[in-house]
Length: 246
Image (cartoon, rainbow, N blue to C red; front, side, top):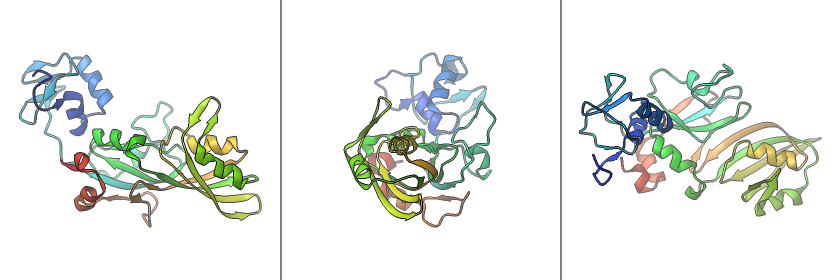
């Protein structure tokens, strides 16, 4: 099919179908493992539709399911990755067996916990990770050290740490007990270890980090390690039409 034809790129199709991430799907194409209508696919820009016969490693691929979304209460001590080269336990190893293949929307590092959104739609995951979406990720953060309220307020203008420029961060002091304080932190970018690095820049050691919300979705009373699907009605209400149309 030509690029002007209707449909979507084959890597995106395979990602939504739960075969692999888009990057891994592109690798499968490069390795000659994907066939379209009995012909080996040679270019990742190949477009397909639900009516095409797509085969990966000799097995037909079903058309992608409707877009689905789950809230997961990630415990600390789990990596947010499908494969960890160091053999550490991962989020995806701990999920219930009945779930389809899912990807995370953003990540939480090994020692962080709280709300992790999961979806069967890789394209949706990438869109919702972008700062342009405008969604705030909020965290409860326990820190050790002397908290300077003015320094926290100044984060609203953004901050540079070790040559990396971070966008505006909302940060406020909730409570203090001795040298331990609880903060509420909100940000839109969610770069790797952003909260920990910014707090260290302020002379604060993070001893606990819990994500309590991601955009309109809340951790709420979801039990540690539990997974709960977001209903289709709520999904349609909370996502822009272009992202929930399937």
